[in-house]
Picture 1 (cartoon, rainbow, N blue to C red):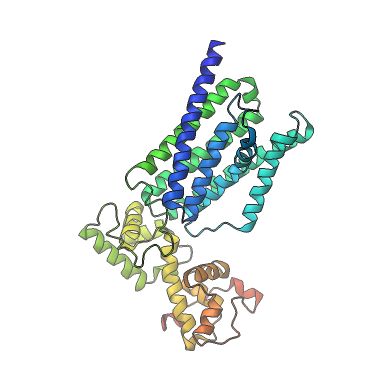
Picture 2: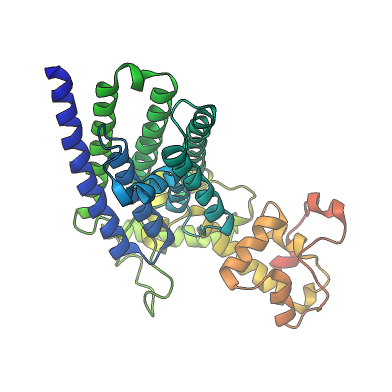
Length: 388
């Protein structure tokens, strides 16, 4: 009995400390980075984890009063918030869609029904519990897969390390809770499982809070909000460690390789391939592109050159007859869809609208006239070379 009492006391102390850190973290993210999607989602996720720490503490049932419904809703939808947070951390251009809100509301309603309306042990309760467990595993898996898929394209070294910790630790925590409940461990050893949950929460909250509370800690983790400054700061001036003269020479050599040799035209070019071409370690090339040229993502670095070439080609009256798909493939894009999205994100216009605005044929379209054209691979980029 004494052991159980000791475990319960330690559990409550750890959960209380975690909640304080998480609420502080949510406030700091909202205050300092609330103008960017990742900052807002990070604050929402911290609130959701704090809600989970409260409502899963033993002995709390029935004592939350009017706070029970919002706390349960935050807890039920937080696995999805974690997935969105992970996506926004690795993609500065990510924007939530209306269906994301609809899915979150569905999960929140399911959690409320499970906690407030359904009797524990009923078939409906067990089905709702299974659905919530499966959704947790699904969102954790999605977050990990997307993190690993885009991790190498991230050029901010400090952000890469912290993001991997956040995503890995939080995904592991979700999986641990899901398996503990699903395999019956939580029922067989409730005090021990609750303490392990509390320890995990405290460790995650402590590391993340320390990273963001350190001087300038969150500055490199999130992009600058649009329109934050009239003039962009110098990439070198903003660097954590100034580039050396040798580094600056390597940056100039990289720019020559991209502008003169047009390496960006290579389809599916990776940072590892470019680093090997330049004779540099991959970590050093990331630092040069990030601190020397101001890019936070390798794909945005490549797309800057590709879109510039495509813009010039679309504005060239001598290439009015060249299909937009051909221009996209010649510039290095693998297909039309990614080109259209990248072009509009960069210019605010679709490729055909850009061509019309530049005086091109009004009837041009982003869609290839021939369905078979999607697989067309040009044999030469000479059309664009003469005008870009």
